Length: 249
Image (tube, rainbow, N blue to C red):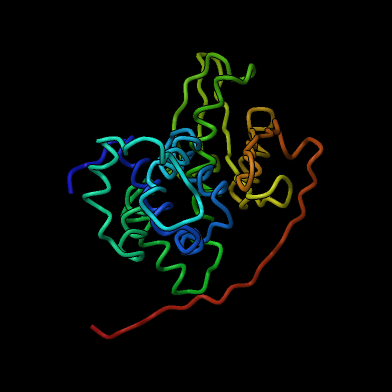
């Protein structure tokens, strides 16, 4: 399969949501179309309305309760995606969608499957995107609108394990920004021990940027020096069972 453009990825997401309707939503652990538009759109780096519009484009071709864009013929570039991918069944199509939406492609799919095998229900496609990729993409599109971050360059540090997801850099200072995503408008967030330690060292140069309400209409709040402000963090210790597999070689 040739590499898909960003528009083609958005069209493919719309085709999936139109063709499989509620079954497709639930297969990916979404509760509503609005949530799916928000999460998939932001994860791809496009407007959620674009994914919705492409779903509506295909709706006249499938037996659902929506009329979609039934007053005009389907556009040629959408028809090309339909002709190529419409034959896929739900499982195959969902796997393809994960491949094109996940930032790390095969690795993210693998980690989701491992989590599923181990019974971790918090690592489904929808939840992984909400708590990671979609929230991070949201921040990348919004940070320049925040006066405090004006003039800063951005560096993605998600793979470095340094206690924050992005470093914002100016000639005189850098900020560490940790991104958290939430499905609801309010709820709990957790910091790892490393994030907490780094925040205690950076103080006013550390920010928690929380993207809320993916279920309906995402918005954000951010907290400078989160350990020294209004947020109250409780230390939680958990005991885990470490499983190893050994063999003789």
